[in-house]
Image 1 (cartoon, rainbow, N blue to C red):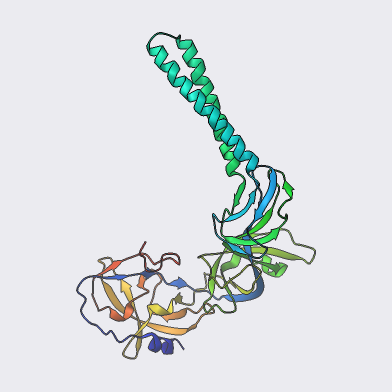
Image 2 (tube, rainbow, N blue to C red):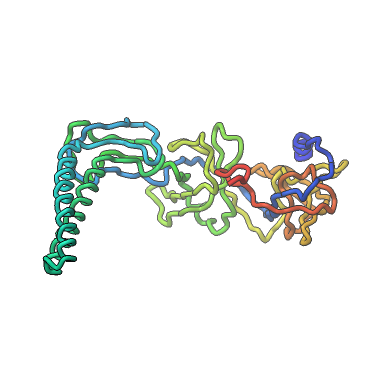
Length: 345
């Protein structure tokens, strides 16, 4: 099965000479044990649920979103009637401008010794006080607009236009989808093996590849059904096809790494050299050496199982293997992230 996959992914570029050092990404073989994969049903959930409200009281003038709408960070969600707040700012602005002009006149008189320094300090203090009051009123005017603090979905709209709300009252409930997690319940028999958990992954309908997960939390107390709540976080930003509330199949790999039976490597690390399956091993002098390996099957996460030819201490090339040559000098780059495809940023 692995050999067939290698033939399909082989490219026709051949071993043409490179004008400069090629850039490569590296990985390390992962030691395998006598592992068992336990499969359970999980559900994708938003990591945070946010209650959104105005920072000041007033009457709702406009609501710009409805339940179920997807919103972006910084998007305007709702507005209060700001007429009174605007008048308050305008009135204080007029008063501030008058006092500011008065302070300027007092300053000129002070230079002419026509007023005492004490009179000037009193005028300046009054101006500073008005400046603070003016800024406070401007802030309240700005608080009449409510913006989304993160990307997400509007789960609930609790008020309608023309209704009165107090400061801090929850007008919306926002599902923050910038971070998502997978939640599932596991039986006590598996909970007792928690020290032997090796890794986690999940599969979802419509998503081709398994998505690696990391342990967020495991509740140490069973519920009424003697199940323990397990929460897992995505190692990378999940596929956009995933939505909160979606069911996924979660794989929990349980094993003993002391009983190593080979190594797992990404399929793209492998290439064919004649009838042999090989990998490129990265050397300390930044050159690569072809290494023949013995292959097993493909593991549940879609990785090739290498039964012989590797010790586990090597760094091997994981991308661009079909254009390299024996002894070629290469330059190592970091693997691109899902939000920086191509490593351009």
